[in-house]
Image (tube, rainbow, N blue to C red):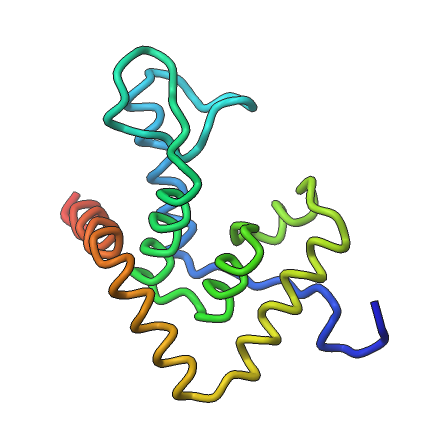
Amino acid sequence: MNDNDNDKPRRVALPPEAIALLEEQRRRFVAKFGREPGPNDPMFFDSDAEGPDPVAITPDAFTRNMTGAMLAVDAPLSVVYAFRKTGIPPMTDAEWETSAYSADDLAEWAAAQTEFEKMSRQQKRLWRRKLETECAAEIAAAKARAAKKEKR
């Protein structure tokens, strides 16, 4: 790693809505399985899978669901880009502190955010439109869950 400030790992606070969606996912787990998720349970599970044990969703489905949820709550696009590029999900500050990710992983995340920030406005718009098309169903589902929660 060089001394350039752009290459230093950075933390990005998630909007309260994104944190709320993660909490909702935990609640859905408890509702389906009748217990809190354990350390070996997938937080993102196939809710249609049969049986008493949680089944993790596929990596592609996880990426689409996470991207849809982030776009639905207007998470910073640099965060969405870094997630898509690195596969490292966004975390709260406390989660970064205790995560198993290495300094190199965090540097990769920061470099991805910097890469996004250097894109032209047109490149950013095209990239967002592509994601909105690819993840349309997931965005709609995340917005519907948020609307349902607001009605409570």
